[in-house]
Length: 87
Image 1 (cartoon, one colour):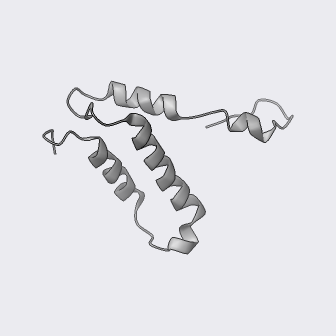
Image 2: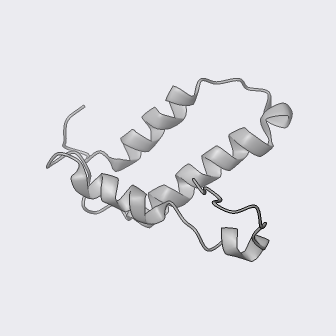
Image 3: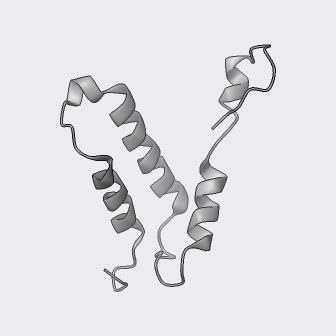
């Protein structure tokens, strides 16, 4: 999340340079051993997560599925979990 410390607005291109991708990768590195499949590309998972968040945010009225956000979290966890790992 971006916090602006001055009243001077920043140009939009400055906001686009910030990414939560490094923090997401830090979270995956901090996960308990064996809970994240090393064969899964974290950037691919982050892109899918970002797409899900954008869809929920921008297209909520169009999709009108009203699924709980926990479903999205569960799907992301399933993508990360090793095939022979913990359930």
